[in-house]
Picture 1 (cartoon, rainbow, N blue to C red):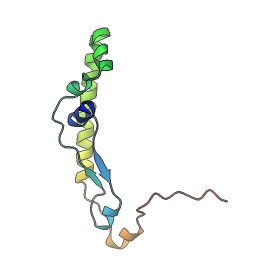
Picture 2: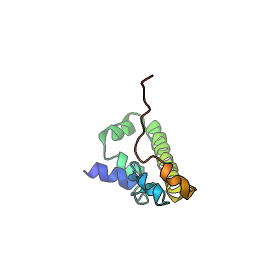
Picture 3: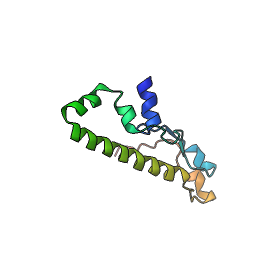
Picture 4: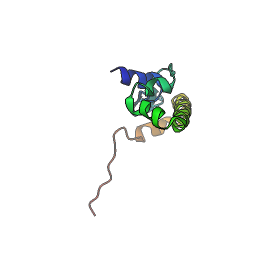
Length: 109
């Protein structure tokens, strides 16, 4: 459980919900449940032996990959913050036309 908590705390694993019903209320269907990352990705990754072993076998590559992972977390966090903050521009008359369930096209001919 410690690793899962660290993955969320580092931003490597984001917690979010998507509820299409919120569109009918004029709200963004995407909700971000994760808080701002509070530990570096390194702290999460080095809880796992597979990542620690890479620092011993290929230290330069491990450092580079860790930097890339942190950059990915930072960029993804900003993207999700942007997506959650967006205002939907859906005319009231069309809100009822938006499907709230997955629609599977018919395959019969």
